[in-house]
Length: 506
Image 1: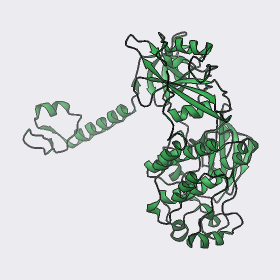
Image 2: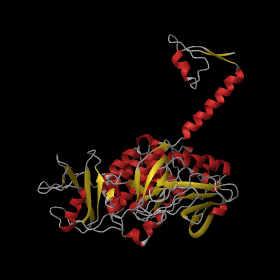
Image 3: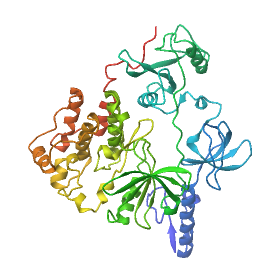
Image 4: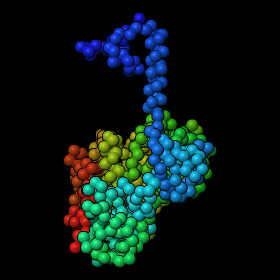
């Protein structure tokens, strides 16, 4: 017989199982034979699994910001402006019921906003930081006078107005205005004039600047929401991928723009046979897919059953940062945008740092750029499972010596601090618009020179403050190099440290 026993005087529990709730309250011993016990345990485990997979239930009404065409039998298509009731949330997808047709199905959660709220306004950007507001407004699709309303980072429940402007030297900038709330529920920026709603305030400033840097023109262009990846698609069929255009060729394979199931645009990296084993790749890929952040390229799915291995990721319209910096559009970028690229990459690496992960191959070629000039880090972790001797040995022709920290070259010691060394070289690539580091030097000369204390000199267009940051990355002792969290804060505030947070109003 198996006894389950718990005492108010003793914390000893024999075969304690929580499916016997009544037992917890009565504290009475319960007898059962082994067959009954094992049956109860199986039932308990199945209930736990069902409970953990159970969706969160909701009954809120949402408004669709974008149209959506159903891709699967259990999806629900809809038009922009249509309203639905959310029944359950399943991560990136929600089960919903149309208030128009009464049909039920799954919808992408990032396509909707709370109905009858400010979230439905084209000018309202929810969950966006001050820095990201500036990035959005300074994107090529926007012009001076573009604006957005966002929630204040510093004052919970308050809002801020961000407006794109042109500075005295002709450079684009963003001005921020704190929106204050009145006791009667009204709003104002300047105490000279108040408004019953934020919508009324925006309408007023569309007609005249009235103390702002300029009249409001049009709402900031919102990037089209990315469809969440298929709920169950991880190891997918090669037949579901249609290659469209070759984007580039690297040391270990080609990169293509492609379509998944003829509907979703993706990037596909094909790995040359022998680059790595499918088993080693899958081990790393299963970790990589859990690392999800706005500054990391999203890993969607893989093809490993038949060679070559396919890596399916989100598509980034402007390609690699290295190629973009060399392009006509990249060459026209001014220093503030170059600093911003650096800050975005530091933000992504700070996330990798917090997750106790290592990139191992951080350089401009492994950073991608979106249409709105947002940077995302790619290929994190892949270097660990590459089996090509030309890459894994420091003498190999493919080994990225010029980006690799001395301790990683000499002892094979890769850490987040060796990533920080690589980040310093990446900063050099950015500030020189994609020039090769250590110009004119062979790999052997780079190794011996760096070990003797040589560091690349300050480029002509590099501010002293930025070069000082680069030199921190190249400290000889790994422990003396800064964290990526610190680097992100320094680069984010590179131009704003001496400015006021908000424009002052009379």
